Image 1 (cartoon, rainbow, N blue to C red):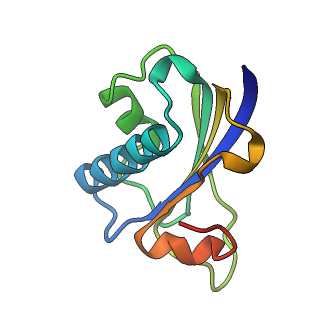
Image 2: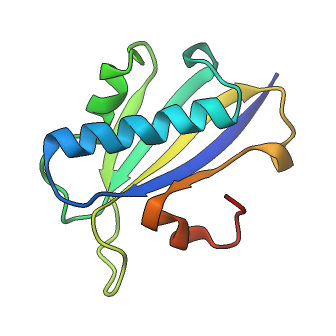
Length: 120
């Protein structure tokens, strides 16, 4: 097994804890499913959120999904003028037999515009 990095993002419609939980859970579930991963394959997950998100920690959604023994950390994304608002980004380090070129990075909804170079 190799260590791989998987990226993803989702744009929230509003800054509300329940909505963040729902959207981040959907993102994490899609990352796992599209890469044929289980929670045992996770090494660590970094979450970033744009400065306009204050309602909750994105990592809280991971814990609610049962990701309880994986190191998680949250940080604030750079406050760049004109950047897409209300975005949670994920960088997950995983153990996978997939070659780097076959890792599926997941950008849900409007966040797909952040990485037009990656086929969704």
